[in-house]
Length: 506
Image (cartoon, rainbow, N blue to C red; front, side, top):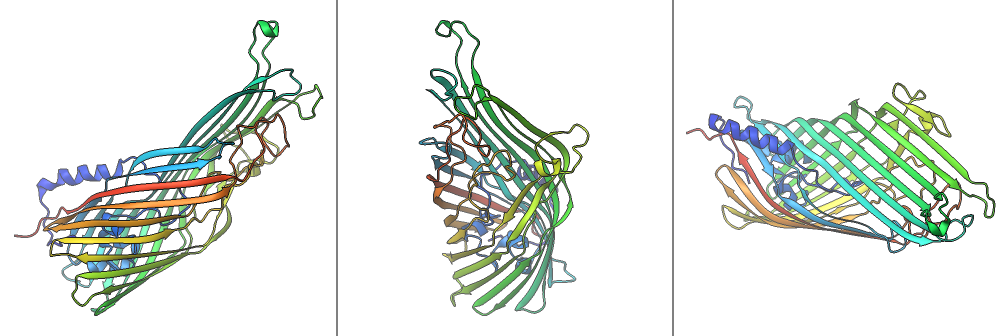
């Protein structure tokens, strides 16, 4: 709903543009559980249409949804779309033990998008768009602990005090910047192409500790404190810069518009990271009744590990129907993401290198390399848009948001070379109002998102500790069960604005 204007820059707007651009870059991370492609939309207008805009109506986000729809913007614009916040609640029952959930409630700020659209006078059929935006901004932090008193160590008479701690912090950013163009071959047919540089930043930290101990005192005859402990620690920080290209086509005739695009596999430009992985336990009796205790330490550290954050091939298609009155639109979009077989997203080397070390049961490239894969996904979105009058618009939509990662895997210590947290399918419903004015628009809307999964596997069991079960399970933790239930609810508020900073010629 941005009103196009003829280019003439006003100097008084330059400080405002610069300030808003900084705001767009320096923002707090917004939560998205991760492992999904359709979690976030780029601007308020596309968000209220649930991203079902491959056949048009995406406004300044055309460079991402379908570059062939860029020519819908026929005049020069320098625009910013900024949104408000979301409040989400994540409850994963029994994730860390019986009646010991992993929970998180958080308020987050949505990403922004800044674009410059140029329509050369000498080539009126060509429109160029330059954009910066945050495609993905995932953040989650879980910090849970428990304690109990129980006879956990048979070799030590009496009860022990027990503490178990679980800490997870995961942050994944994916910023895009680049250019695209759309060219009208005729009044009905257009094609487009976009080339964007993606900067992906992945930070992951996971710590699990368990301790069984006694407290020295008169009842122990002032004897030394008894202690058994176990620990798992994984931390990596890495980045990857990649080239993302997309080719689109758009056809519009009378009451119908059709759009399609193909998103090609991303090409790595450069990027690396560092990883630390440690697994240790001490004073653990593997054989009941045997007074001999076992201790173990495995650890490795390496810098400059090559990173690989691959983006799969995806194909999207959409159709829009415009009613004869021109006041209503029905939109439908579907996108299929091809899968990616197992690949290394942390590629460690045989030599740990300077400031690195290796004290592991396998070679450094096996101990510190991490693998992942992405399942194929098919998502569908549908929406409507109603022009109430020349200024006021109402719109809404629904979309699926299926996960491409497998559920959490059982921890088989010490060979855990995958991220371990939950992924689940989510469904989004949008509704809102838009008000257009001469040089932009204001949009007020809301989105409700819901996701759930049942019978998932526990991450770790800290409420029923056993001194030792097997070499594939961390000591001082309990048997793993499949009784985890996930409940995710998110209410997002869009109080967005899009403003054209290029002043209309007088």
